[in-house]
Image (tube, rainbow over all chains, first blue to last red; front, side, top):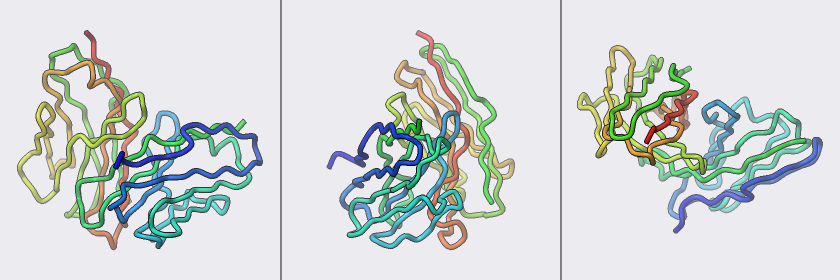
Length: 114
Length: 118
Protein backbone atom coordinates (compact mmCIF):
# COMPACT_ATOMS: atom_id res chain seq x y z
CA UNK A 1 0.00 0.00 0.00
CA UNK A 2 1.53 3.29 -1.10
CA UNK A 3 -0.68 5.59 0.96
CA UNK A 4 -3.42 7.89 -0.26
CA UNK A 5 -3.27 8.47 -4.00
CA UNK A 6 -4.85 11.41 -5.81
CA UNK A 7 -5.22 11.96 -9.53
CA UNK A 8 -4.55 14.07 -11.40
CA UNK A 9 -1.86 16.06 -9.60
CA UNK A 10 -2.62 19.16 -11.61
CA UNK A 11 -5.65 20.22 -13.63
CA UNK A 12 -6.08 23.38 -15.68
CA UNK A 13 -9.57 23.98 -16.98
CA UNK A 14 -11.55 26.75 -18.57
CA UNK A 15 -14.29 28.47 -16.62
CA UNK A 16 -17.57 26.69 -17.07
CA UNK A 17 -16.10 23.24 -17.68
CA UNK A 18 -16.67 20.23 -15.44
CA UNK A 19 -13.80 18.50 -13.69
CA UNK A 20 -13.52 15.27 -11.72
CA UNK A 21 -10.83 14.25 -9.27
CA UNK A 22 -10.14 10.80 -7.93
CA UNK A 23 -8.87 9.66 -4.54
CA UNK A 24 -7.72 6.15 -3.64
CA UNK A 25 -7.44 5.81 0.14
CA UNK A 26 -5.39 3.37 2.15
CA UNK A 27 -7.14 0.07 1.54
CA UNK A 28 -8.09 -0.75 5.12
CA UNK A 29 -9.32 2.76 5.91
CA UNK A 30 -13.09 3.07 5.99
CA UNK A 31 -13.23 6.87 6.33
CA UNK A 32 -12.40 9.25 3.52
CA UNK A 33 -12.30 13.04 3.63
CA UNK A 34 -12.11 15.89 1.14
CA UNK A 35 -10.58 19.25 2.03
CA UNK A 36 -9.91 22.39 0.01
CA UNK A 37 -6.83 24.53 0.54
CA UNK A 38 -6.42 27.97 -0.99
CA UNK A 39 -3.14 29.85 -1.10
CA UNK A 40 -2.00 30.99 2.31
CA UNK A 41 -4.77 29.20 4.16
CA UNK A 42 -5.16 26.00 6.05
CA UNK A 43 -7.25 23.18 4.62
CA UNK A 44 -11.02 23.58 4.94
CA UNK A 45 -13.32 20.62 5.38
CA UNK A 46 -15.63 19.78 2.49
CA UNK A 47 -17.11 16.34 3.16
CA UNK A 48 -16.44 12.89 4.51
CA UNK A 49 -17.53 9.32 3.99
CA UNK A 50 -17.67 6.29 6.18
CA UNK A 51 -17.62 3.36 3.79
CA UNK A 52 -19.99 4.41 0.99
CA UNK A 53 -22.14 6.71 3.13
CA UNK A 54 -21.57 10.45 2.93
CA UNK A 55 -21.96 11.47 6.58
CA UNK A 56 -21.30 15.19 6.52
CA UNK A 57 -21.06 18.01 4.01
CA UNK A 58 -19.76 21.51 4.62
CA UNK A 59 -21.64 24.61 3.55
CA UNK A 60 -18.61 25.21 1.33
CA UNK A 61 -19.84 22.34 -0.82
CA UNK A 62 -22.19 24.19 -3.14
CA UNK A 63 -24.66 22.52 -5.49
CA UNK A 64 -21.97 22.48 -8.15
CA UNK A 65 -19.91 20.06 -6.08
CA UNK A 66 -20.67 16.40 -5.72
CA UNK A 67 -18.69 13.63 -4.12
CA UNK A 68 -19.19 9.90 -4.30
CA UNK A 69 -17.67 6.78 -2.88
CA UNK A 70 -19.65 4.12 -4.68
CA UNK A 71 -18.19 0.94 -3.24
CA UNK A 72 -16.58 2.30 -0.12
CA UNK A 73 -13.17 2.29 -1.74
CA UNK A 74 -12.08 5.12 -4.06
CA UNK A 75 -13.88 8.45 -4.15
CA UNK A 76 -14.53 11.07 -6.80
CA UNK A 77 -15.10 14.78 -6.39
CA UNK A 78 -16.80 16.52 -9.30
CA UNK A 79 -17.11 20.24 -9.80
CA UNK A 80 -19.61 21.36 -12.41
CA UNK A 81 -19.49 24.71 -14.23
CA UNK A 82 -16.18 25.64 -12.66
CA UNK A 83 -15.56 29.21 -11.53
CA UNK A 84 -12.27 31.02 -10.95
CA UNK A 85 -12.97 30.90 -7.21
CA UNK A 86 -12.75 27.11 -7.37
CA UNK A 87 -9.01 27.35 -8.01
CA UNK A 88 -7.39 25.61 -5.06
CA UNK A 89 -5.63 22.48 -3.89
CA UNK A 90 -8.09 19.67 -3.23
CA UNK A 91 -6.82 17.29 -0.58
CA UNK A 92 -8.05 13.81 0.16
CA UNK A 93 -7.35 11.95 3.38
CA UNK A 94 -8.34 8.64 4.92
CA UNK A 95 -8.50 7.08 8.34
CA UNK A 96 -9.87 4.12 10.25
CA UNK A 97 -12.89 4.89 12.41
CA UNK A 98 -11.96 4.76 16.07
CA UNK A 99 -8.35 5.59 15.27
CA UNK A 100 -7.51 8.92 16.87
CA UNK A 101 -4.10 9.25 15.32
CA UNK A 102 -5.21 11.70 12.68
CA UNK A 103 -5.53 11.24 8.97
CA UNK A 104 -3.23 10.15 6.20
CA UNK A 105 -3.32 12.77 3.47
CA UNK A 106 -2.73 12.46 -0.24
CA UNK A 107 -0.56 14.87 -2.21
CA UNK A 108 -3.58 16.75 -3.50
CA UNK A 109 -4.93 17.87 -6.85
CA UNK A 110 -4.18 21.46 -7.78
CA UNK A 111 -7.01 22.97 -9.81
CA UNK A 112 -6.52 26.14 -11.83
CA UNK A 113 -9.57 27.64 -13.50
CA UNK A 114 -8.71 30.10 -16.27
CA UNK B 1 -17.72 26.52 16.36
CA UNK B 2 -14.11 25.78 17.07
CA UNK B 3 -11.38 28.06 15.78
CA UNK B 4 -7.63 27.62 15.55
CA UNK B 5 -5.26 30.58 15.40
CA UNK B 6 -1.64 30.59 14.35
CA UNK B 7 -0.34 34.11 14.80
CA UNK B 8 3.09 33.58 13.23
CA UNK B 9 2.84 33.50 9.42
CA UNK B 10 6.60 32.93 9.10
CA UNK B 11 9.40 31.81 11.37
CA UNK B 12 13.10 31.26 10.81
CA UNK B 13 15.59 29.17 12.74
CA UNK B 14 19.29 28.42 12.46
CA UNK B 15 20.14 24.80 11.78
CA UNK B 16 20.67 22.86 15.05
CA UNK B 17 18.83 25.51 17.07
CA UNK B 18 15.39 25.29 18.72
CA UNK B 19 12.23 27.00 17.53
CA UNK B 20 8.73 27.21 18.96
CA UNK B 21 5.60 27.62 16.85
CA UNK B 22 2.49 29.01 18.52
CA UNK B 23 -1.10 27.88 18.30
CA UNK B 24 -4.19 28.89 20.22
CA UNK B 25 -7.68 27.52 19.86
CA UNK B 26 -11.16 28.24 21.03
CA UNK B 27 -13.62 25.58 22.09
CA UNK B 28 -16.28 24.92 24.67
CA UNK B 29 -15.63 21.19 24.60
CA UNK B 30 -13.63 19.30 27.19
CA UNK B 31 -12.84 16.26 25.06
CA UNK B 32 -10.79 16.91 21.95
CA UNK B 33 -7.55 16.20 20.13
CA UNK B 34 -4.90 18.58 18.88
CA UNK B 35 -2.46 17.92 16.07
CA UNK B 36 0.50 19.46 14.36
CA UNK B 37 0.87 18.68 10.68
CA UNK B 38 3.84 19.42 8.44
CA UNK B 39 3.35 20.27 4.78
CA UNK B 40 6.62 20.25 2.81
CA UNK B 41 6.83 21.81 -0.64
CA UNK B 42 5.64 18.51 -2.16
CA UNK B 43 2.31 19.40 -0.49
CA UNK B 44 1.56 16.11 1.28
CA UNK B 45 0.49 16.77 4.86
CA UNK B 46 2.33 14.64 7.40
CA UNK B 47 1.28 14.17 11.01
CA UNK B 48 4.03 15.40 13.33
CA UNK B 49 2.51 14.99 16.77
CA UNK B 50 -0.84 14.75 18.52
CA UNK B 51 -2.19 15.49 21.99
CA UNK B 52 -5.30 14.23 23.75
CA UNK B 53 -6.93 16.96 25.83
CA UNK B 54 -7.51 14.64 28.78
CA UNK B 55 -3.80 13.93 29.12
CA UNK B 56 -1.82 16.38 31.19
CA UNK B 57 1.52 15.07 30.00
CA UNK B 58 2.88 16.89 26.97
CA UNK B 59 3.39 14.71 23.91
CA UNK B 60 6.88 14.19 22.50
CA UNK B 61 8.11 12.58 19.27
CA UNK B 62 11.88 12.57 18.98
CA UNK B 63 12.90 16.20 18.32
CA UNK B 64 9.30 17.44 18.41
CA UNK B 65 7.45 18.25 21.59
CA UNK B 66 4.41 20.27 22.54
CA UNK B 67 3.53 22.61 25.36
CA UNK B 68 -0.17 22.00 25.97
CA UNK B 69 -1.80 24.54 28.25
CA UNK B 70 -5.46 23.50 28.43
CA UNK B 71 -6.68 26.38 30.57
CA UNK B 72 -5.02 28.90 28.29
CA UNK B 73 -6.11 26.94 25.18
CA UNK B 74 -2.58 27.01 23.89
CA UNK B 75 -0.75 24.27 21.99
CA UNK B 76 2.75 25.22 20.88
CA UNK B 77 5.21 23.03 18.98
CA UNK B 78 8.89 22.97 19.87
CA UNK B 79 11.38 21.68 17.35
CA UNK B 80 14.79 20.93 18.81
CA UNK B 81 18.04 20.53 16.88
CA UNK B 82 16.39 21.93 13.75
CA UNK B 83 17.33 20.30 10.47
CA UNK B 84 17.11 21.54 6.89
CA UNK B 85 14.40 18.96 6.26
CA UNK B 86 12.19 20.63 8.86
CA UNK B 87 11.57 23.54 6.49
CA UNK B 88 7.87 23.44 5.64
CA UNK B 89 4.45 24.85 6.45
CA UNK B 90 3.24 23.74 9.86
CA UNK B 91 -0.45 23.57 10.61
CA UNK B 92 -2.10 23.25 13.98
CA UNK B 93 -5.41 21.36 13.91
CA UNK B 94 -8.28 20.59 16.27
CA UNK B 95 -10.65 17.64 16.29
CA UNK B 96 -13.58 17.16 18.56
CA UNK B 97 -13.64 14.09 20.78
CA UNK B 98 -17.37 13.85 20.16
CA UNK B 99 -18.28 12.67 16.68
CA UNK B 100 -21.88 13.69 17.33
CA UNK B 101 -21.06 17.33 17.96
CA UNK B 102 -18.59 18.12 15.21
CA UNK B 103 -18.33 15.06 13.07
CA UNK B 104 -14.90 13.74 12.36
CA UNK B 105 -13.43 16.79 10.72
CA UNK B 106 -10.25 18.67 11.48
CA UNK B 107 -10.24 22.43 11.90
CA UNK B 108 -6.93 23.91 10.81
CA UNK B 109 -5.11 27.14 11.53
CA UNK B 110 -3.67 29.24 8.73
CA UNK B 111 -0.21 27.80 9.13
CA UNK B 112 3.33 28.94 9.92
CA UNK B 113 6.02 28.78 7.28
CA UNK B 114 9.28 27.64 8.85
CA UNK B 115 12.58 28.40 7.18
CA UNK B 116 15.77 26.71 8.37
CA UNK B 117 19.02 28.60 7.77
CA UNK B 118 22.12 26.48 7.14
